[in-house]
Amino acid sequence: SVYARWLDFIGEQLIAQVEVEIGGQRIDRQYGDWMHIWNQLTMSSEQQRGYFKMIGNTTQLTYITDPDFADVSGPCASTGGPNQVCAPRKTLPETTLYVPLLFWFCRNPGLALPLIALQYHEVKINLDIRPIGECLWAVKDLSASSGTQSVSAAYQQSLVAASLYVDYIFLDTDERRKMAQNPHEYLFEQVQFTGDESVGSSSNKIKLNFNHPCKELIWVVQPDANVDYCSSLDATGILYRTLGAQPFNYTDAIDALPNAIHAFGGKNSVSADENAFINTSGLFQMPGALDTSATATKGADQWGAIPFNDLQNTQGSLVSDAGTFVLSETALDMHCWGENPVVTAKLQLNGQDRFSEREGSYFDVVQPFQHHTRAPDTG
Image (cartoon, rainbow, N blue to C red; front, side, top):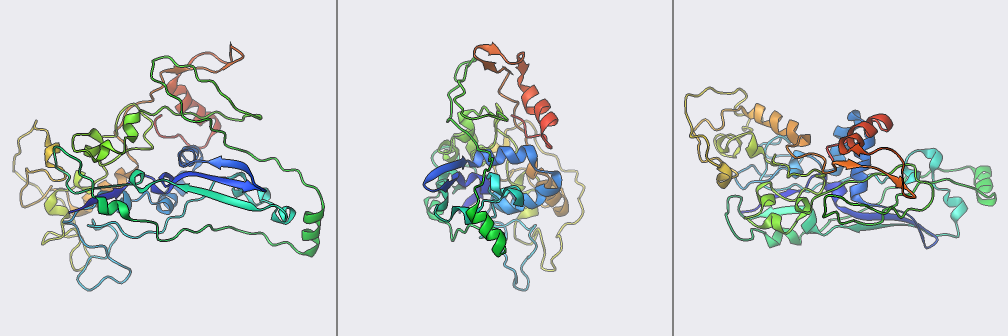
């Protein structure tokens, strides 16, 4: 048996770093972390649903699979097989991800890179991809109490293909000649990152070694425990219970809400048997919720029974299949994690306070409200 899921925001998590190089010189370098943070600050709610599909932040990819679920269905599902995307699946589907890069020339046509004026300079996009162990979480058992549960075969997979899509602007003869012969001056923005800093004590002073004028400073504080990929495969670790590492959790506590449909519907409700989630007619097997008089013992820690609660009856969780689907989809962007690890912070220039000391919440709530179009996640 294999239980597997891609980690959250897998399209962003895949990118260790990406850089643009012109004439052998690195002009800008960006990171998956940066892409996630910038999108948290700037992306509109109208674009979020489509963007989540582009980068694979969907229940089909980030919710845990289960051998008792239905087979993955293709565009032409066979007769009698569930073909709706809402049916829980036993394996992860092959998927094409589209990850938009955020270099300065990607923002609007007016900032396009003038390749005709760079005909003697080679332009390269260099991409480093994270190892699969930092992107996929796959185990053989969800209810073990000890030992490493890693499924080695799952981590031997590789990308089927990778492509770079580029939009070009074609110029007529006169424009092309003018662009090629005349000098140009361009102002472009760079992302500067000086590397991770250790902040083990309660009071820390971080030196900012940046060049050129800086328009904005963005920082996060993340406990190492949130991204301990190795311990997430150990049945005694907390990340094993929460179904993998949490690379985009910038709070002081683990997100306790698991990426699993099991959190919303019981075994009988979501398995691919006579109580199938989607029946052979393509409809919810249980479109309406049921009532029950059954009682269950409370107070016991049920993590040992993950993914299924042993306290079951023939009616499953009593949440309808339709309700289970709505709950799981709605919870995709919900979290049960901690608070901003930063208690207070201030900026000093040449030893002088640039502004008075502010609470951490000022920087992750007030500042985005004043200067951006979206409030980011906590942290």
